[in-house]
Amino acid sequence: MTETASSDSCSICTEPVEPHTESYCNACGRLFHLNQREDLPGRDCGTVSLSETHLALVFACNACLEEPAEPVAPTLEAVLDLSEAALATGLSEDELAEAAAAGQVSHRRTAGGSLLFDREAVEALLRTRGTA
Image (cartoon, rainbow, N blue to C red; front, side, top):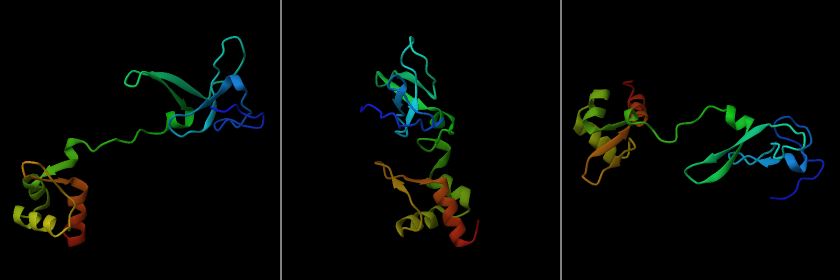
């Protein structure tokens, strides 16, 4: 980490950052105030916490802390197998399998050979066919 120049300002409050309050957000990489000394005055425009997974300190600015968390991966409700997708769309399993083979709908095939679809992809297929 490089030492800040006196002209560097906090990305949250835009005030100058002193060396003892210099922190960089692990999420966005922006500079922010985080007073790291108890014996000196300073403001906090974020937090630091311990990641138990990585056994490391995690620095986060207030802007990133206030943003709504995006889902990392789709939930199981968003994944449909061939029969569930066919029921949800009103298409036959054969029609849906043909659409997948033709590249009209994104899908995955499991090691056992089952077709899996994202609900959004199936709904997009219906919209393109004009049946949604």
